[in-house]
Image (cartoon, rainbow, N blue to C red; front, side, top):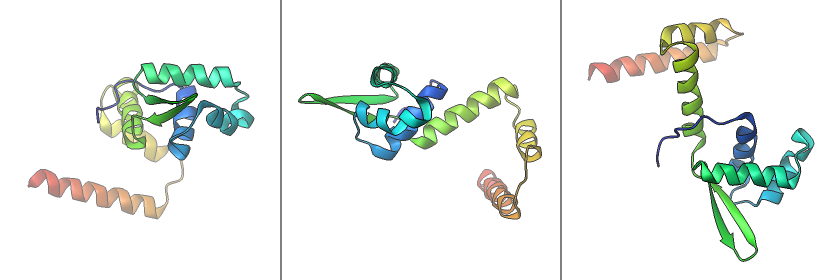
Length: 129
């Protein structure tokens, strides 16, 4: 699967999260899921989903009168794309200031710190090999 090359808009994030939870799905299903949160009409949801198909984020498959949508990008790919975009644009590609900002931005549990330490330790071993 290709790496995500396009950052998602807030609307695309809302839709793709709903698609991941229900795929394969139809536009009316997504509209019903998001209506209370967004107030979007069917035509708004369908337009965004069609644009996401054009951008390569979703795949549409016609089955009779129904169009089924599936994600093309995984949650991991989308998250990685967003993170790399922030790293590049907000931190000029500098990882340490980004991590420092995240560490200073809120309460971090001992468990989170231990997991981060384990990830760093594993990465150091991997780099040495």
